[in-house]
Amino acid sequence: MGAEKRAKALSWVYRWGWSSPTLVDDYVSPGRRGLVKGLVDQGYLASYPNPAGGGDRGNPRQAICLTEKGQSFVEGYLETRDELLPQRREDDIPWRQLRHDYLVQQASVDAIKAGKIKDALSPKQLSQQSRAGIKQPDAIWILVSGQRAAIELELTRKKPGLEENQTVAALVNSISTEAGDGKVDMVIIVSHSKAILDTYEHLLQPNRTVRLYTRDAQRKWVESGKMNIPTSISEKFMYHKIDL
Image 1 (cartoon, helix red, strand yellow):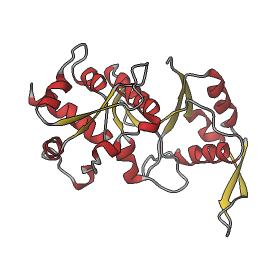
Image 2 (tube, helix red, strand yellow):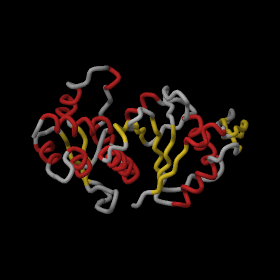
Image 3 (cartoon, rainbow, N blue to C red):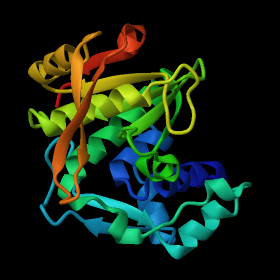
């Protein structure tokens, strides 16, 4: 196994905290299998069975994480302190929302392989730059142009009212003409449901009023104001339907 392929596979798992054998094999060696198995056998990766069984589309049977040996290998290549990420082993695996998070990784790999993006930043990387009131996306795609696109995968609709308004306000606040400090140049909302995509397109219409909320002294959410969606950023929301 070449050191370059090993580094590419282990770096992906390091940045996301976890992944699946088939996804990493597909990312590093499209059309071939066995790379991850070799890394598990060599002690760089540990494999954990899905407690729910898995096996259906978007729900892997196994999840993998770096071992101490694998973490040491990756960190030997890192050059800046900002690149260091905590590795919590099995605790990094989001069992309760495994399908959702796996589909985000899969979409990112597909976009990289298709040449649509240069790279994807994971939630683990993004948590280092989170800011209050700015929606932390499921991933950020670095486009060929260098622009940053937030990816929001929605498999179920947000609850109307508080949850829906807070999500919309945070998405609007995440867009900046100068991406940075947790902000992005555009947002791509992804779903298998045309109804969900149509709902977001309605909620994010320019000049639409969004209710804002804060917690009162009793820690209850109360309406605290309103904001209008700026016309200038309406074109920066895009909608993409996927098949599950």
